Length: 27
Image 1 (cartoon, rainbow, N blue to C red):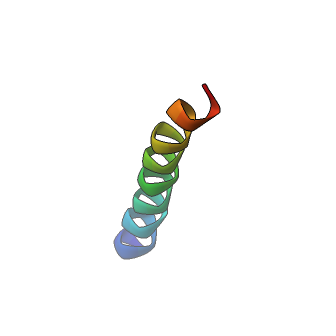
Image 2: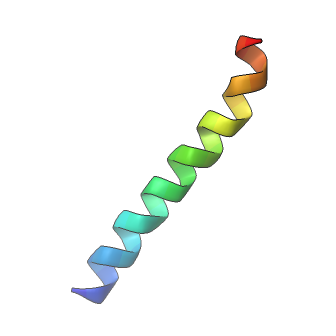
């Protein structure tokens, strides 16, 4: 259960980082 939760949070973190990287390109 803990590993599933950590993988879920990790996927959210990578998505957030991806949006941070793509945001300046939109500007």
